[in-house]
Amino acid sequence: MNNILKLLIILAIVFLIAGLIIFQGRDKASFKEGETSSSEKISTNKDSLDVIAKNLPVLIDLGRGTCKACKMMLPILQELQEEYKGRAIIQIIDIRYDPEPARFYKIRLIPTQIFFDASGKEIYRHEGFMDKLSIEQKLQEIGVK
Image 1 (cartoon, rainbow, N blue to C red):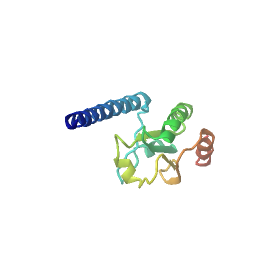
Image 2 (image 1 turned 90 degrees about the vertical axis):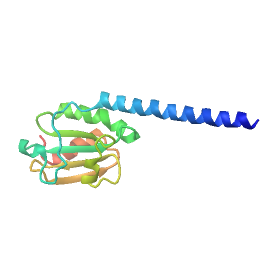
Image 3 (image 1 turned 45 degrees about the vertical axis):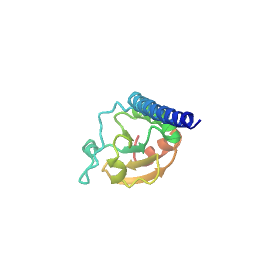
Image 4 (image 1 turned 120 degrees about the horizontal axis):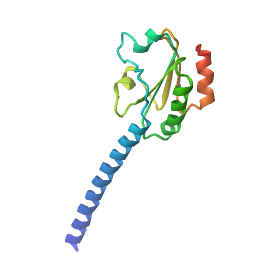
């Protein structure tokens, strides 16, 4: 009986580890599929944002592909990237793979959206899910036409 219990514990551990490996690989694959195609990258360098030279307003969304609100926002943000191409830069950052921006921008909750005007000045910060209409209204407030 004691040997059977030990065997069951070992099997449970093996299945747990295998499950973690499978789910971790699936999260990375889903992120790759949903990754932004934009070549515009926000620098986390304290000196400047790379995109300021373009004189466009910027929205940075910081989240994780595993959080429910982040998953709900991804298609909205991708749609907005296309709709506002040439008028605003919308950058999606998954902090699982790039944690430095979360530290740099002092993120406390995900998702967080940070809006910058065309000069690079932070204008507004929102924590949590933000619907498309609210994002569009805020983009208009910061000068996107």
